[in-house]
Image (tube, rainbow over all chains, first blue to last red; front, side, top):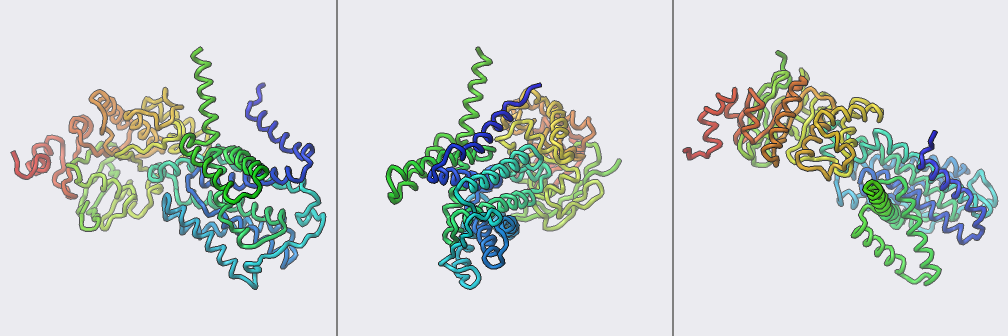
Length: 324
Length: 240
């Protein structure tokens, strides 16, 4: 009996991630780890649509924000737990993806991307104007209930870490399952060539719609988690363009259309960003500059991202072993 | 003999250009028909009309007794029609096996079954040695083979091949002709669009000639080649 080496590695990584908060006690370090897992989660959700199916959305902040507002409104106005709000937010994001997809999928390539940016910006403007319903531009703080696990509020950061770790594992499990299923093949095929995909019997609009719904659902869950974590919501936080950018960026750097690409990309980018901040303080523009340089370097030299680079190394090593 | 495809009074214009005008023809089951004509005659447009990539302005297309005008391309494929493209469109980042599996998934959603069916189609076109090669690394002839395997994997009854000989050298043309013959022997009805007369003569006993979007001749190879209209279309209006 031989256990697949992949399964062993996966098990080891998960065990390591679960054990980390037992070792890492500093609140600063835990905060960085939570951010890494959060953006890895958003990136993994983005990757389903933007990576596998190559529908390059830069509007995922729309779903992040809708998820955040849905759970917060339910909690403050109706006293409903954010755990339920998170699922409701997911559903809200999923439903919102239908009209957004209906509009944006008419366009291809860069035009699709621009349309997705516009939808997220429009939603932000809507929530800026909704003073009576959703606190307008001022936003609101989320009432601090102390240690209230049922309301997704905890003492210390470690529980938050485990919540977002679970979310990430959920997204990875969905991705791994899709990768092996018929839909996974269909996603890659339509991303490569839509006409050829139609010609082999793939209902391209339907597959795009379905994957957009899944991607939006997960991204909306991330929105709920984030506002619960920072106890504050306003339109500029919830619908921030940088969320859309980061979701795409971590996937590109790590390797689009790969299971672990977004996670690896986030580890690299967030660590870099945290180190930069501790060295240089909040010097304006440094982070953006460094991100841009990393992005250009990846696109120029390793368009397949870190995962593509690793696969290449692996193939080369194997070839060498065969020849020797 | 039953009729596989009946095209009636098909019309399509793009702005001022009448790409296909009042074209009708019938393809019998198990025959190989060739659609020929000079560049810009409307052959590929006719393919796109049949397969649902364009919607005709007028006319009807029925396949195996069912009207298919208005169906989207994937529905046409489910109905048993498959095609290849004039410029091969492999899914470049996928391996040969994965490419063909996307076709096989149409009839069986389980990856293991699709993989088996795909392997069979790949073996049929003689590409088994390249199974794990990324499609973008294939030579031209192997890309044609791949497209045929991917189409065959959808288990079609009617196969439309758009210039599969384009860009092949003479010995490769012989291989491709052999392959199309093998497909026909398998019981497939085949329509080919082809420029290369050597291939047309080797494959089709029934030829339809288009010029400027209109059908100008139809019949056996000998009929068609001796038709003065056809000679004029190919050699130019001045004649020789």
